[in-house]
Image 1: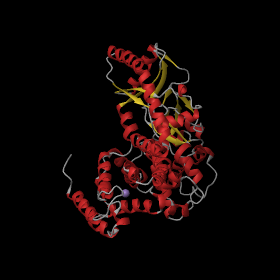
Image 2: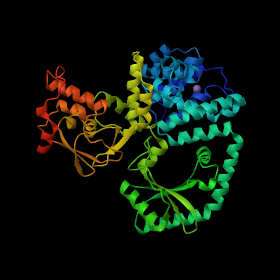
Image 3: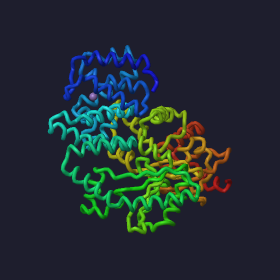
Image 4: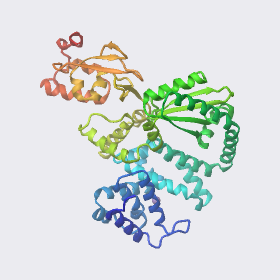
Length: 497
Ligand code: MN
């Protein structure tokens, strides 16, 4: 690790002085807590402003230090972040302020997301704060422990999931669940251990069989076993009548390989060795989960009569599933969303579009505009399809989108010059609704111009607004003219292609 920068050192000094004399419930000096938050944020590779804000996150609320002073010493960005974290903590559990804005939604996570949608780093700092509080929860009275554990499970674990921080989500869930229902936790923990012991030899046999085959094929791989977390086992058992024999993924063998092609190759090899169970092959590479998770899953029965789940993914997918959006990567992407909003870049990883939507929504809220939260929830969480470019890039679109939506998502110029679309290898008309997993190719011609008839052939707000501004620029009288021009009909253009 490199030496702390002068700003970081200064932040530690300022926080230490501000919290002087304060103690945590554990009896330790209070500064232990902000320093632990700092360490967590460093582990997540957050940018320096976030780390400094992490060090100072409790000062404005709990000490004499003011936001003004923070701004003078550390800049507006740090002050903004500290203010965001303080606002979240101030209203008890962070939701009270928002009830004024969004009285009708009971979805706390949604409120939290919107409150801070302007800068996702606020959420990440809050997550680090919560993680350390959970790790040191034993110092609190049992009633308080349960309250914090429940809130963590209901709000912060889903938040970590939205930010794709798999390992953080699991830690929050496991710790919280242990406090909420210690007896159940212990029972399931023992059950898992017992099962693991029973299956150990058979699992090793299966693993070795696959490893031998991969070596024969000269495929580089990493393999590890993953044991289902206690909390997700608890949730799954509730769905399966508490019958642990129906939980096939209690233990999974994970193979991590270099690229997507190799993932499918490994799947083929596994299926040639063992009999796959029907309906248990899941291709989350072509069709990622809504939080962006990617992997191939298959459950097989080995000759030892052991049921084993295999998970196959690339290193990149693995990193993403575990570490998610915190990391330098995340912050760069955060900047990327801004660049996207300003039209400086045209592509944004589909997993991150929700951040942009939050930014737009919170901007509306700030201006006092009304927000349709039902629609927002749909936009954020469900009403999406993922389609691909021929090169394999994943693009997310609202359900109901058509080829022009896709074209405008790639680039407004591609939209403007679109003369046709090929979906899954077949030429289709521009009013074809795209489906999950479609591979979409756009045909463009230089001389093509957008025409008003296209307004019926776009679905997404994004494409519609791009198209409208192009039409307005190209046809000065356009806004007056409501009827599409029949001479610029699409059928005619298509023949040209
Ligand atoms: Mn704190």
